[in-house]
Every structure is written in C-alpha cells, then in structure tokens.
Image 1 (cartoon, rainbow, N blue to C red):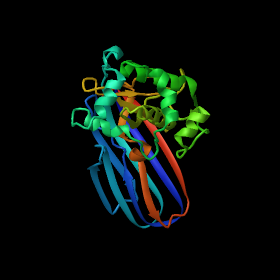
Image 2: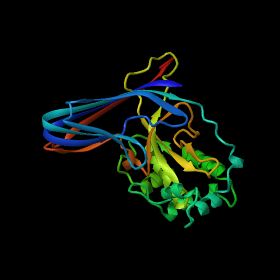
Image 3: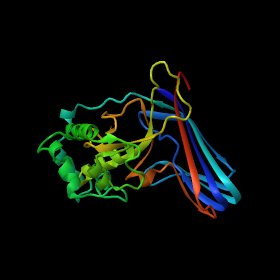
Image 4: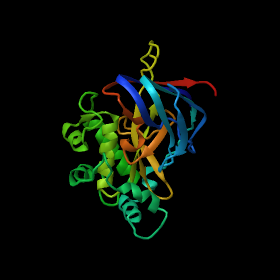
Length: 294
C-alpha cells in the first residue's frame, strides 16, 4: 500500500513567545517492510536553527529553535510512504515464552541482549504484580510466545472499552486497568506493562492506521489520528512482531510506523519548551490518504 501522509500541528499561544526549542518525530522509519521516498517538515515561523539526527532508538528526529516574538506555531509533516505485506510466523513455531524471558535476562552477551533492554519499567510503564497477574492466564507454562501475545492482545480488545474521555495522556496504567477503558495509547501501555511484568521485552510503537469512511461517505480532511501499538521480541528467528490491542490484529499494510521507544514519552510527535507563552491551544489534524503511485 502507498500513502500520502499529512500531519498538521498548530499552537496558538495566550501570550507572545520569545524563545522556544522543539523536538519532532514525524518522519516514517525506514524498515524492511516500509520505505519513505519523500518527507518534508514545514515550520512557521521559520526556525533560526534546525538539525536532523537519529535518537537512541533510531527514530528520525528533527530539532528546531525559534527566536523572536511569535504568537503561533505551525508544523506540517508531509510524507509519501509505501508499506509492504508482512509474513508473520506461525504462532506454534515460536519458542516458549519462558525461553525468551530466560535468554533476554541472561548475563551472557548473546543475540537476545539488545532486545532485553526493553524488559524494564519506563517513565510511563511500570512493572508490578497486578499486571503480571492480569496477563498470567494467557501465558501458561510452555506456551509459544506469539500464541500468548495474540491471546493477551485479544483479551485486552474484548475486555476494555475504547473511550476517548476516560483517560488523558497522563493517566496511570494502573487506573486504565481498573477502569477497563481508554484509547490506543492506554491499551499499548497496558500491554507493555503486562509483558514486561512477566520479564518479556516489548516496545511502544507510534504511527498511523489507515481508516476508511462509511460506505457512501467521503473522507473528512484531518479526521485521521496518530495510532499506537506494541512490538514484542519473539526470539532470534521470529524477531520483533507487532501487535495492536486496540484492533486485535497483527499490523500489516495499513499500519504505518513512525517511531518506537520504551513508551509514549520517547516518541511524542512534537514536544518543546517555550519562554513567555503562558497557556496555549493545541490543534492536530492528520490525513492518511491511499495513493496509486509515488
């Protein structure tokens, strides 16, 4: 599948800003199943300084800074991306989850060591007995890890309600578990907490999901949104496999990957600090548009 992506972020400040520094992670990652032949980041007002680098997790990151009085900021990421089909391994052919846990936790440097860094708690994803207990029924002894991951993903999808007003960006994962409600970020954080509390490596993935309007209706401009899911290390042969608990599916051509990290705090699309702003109003509009060619 080929897509045109437009992600528009606008800030309207209550007061005039004199200096601001920002970090954007809005460029699609180059991956074996994904390529991005063209990406442009348009910023108004024009920054006085700007640079692009890869962060600690390999995400394309743009730093920019503004000087001079301004009351608004607009950042528009415009990309073309192609996503290829993913061939997922058969669940029963993946190793037992305890074997993956043991290999990733070994003190001996091996092929699992790098993945093992994603076993630990992070700023927005704690590890705790309550999360391990919730996941336990899907992880009986000896079960192949991908089968267990699919089962946990499906149970979160069935037992939790998608509710845009139940949580906000700062809602603790323990409260999400108690409320049994939230949005894609919450379900990704919950699944990460469950997996890591069992000692398994898992990372947070941010991106987009192609949505389709109801039959007979036209696509609304700016009506799409950022999406979040998880990726679980399923052994050296299977590698990292993505899982989307919001939609109970293993992502494929309709999922577009932008960045990954320990949790949302590592991959926020745009964040920064300002001097003199006071309050601010934020508006985000996203378009994921299927195209015939690039």
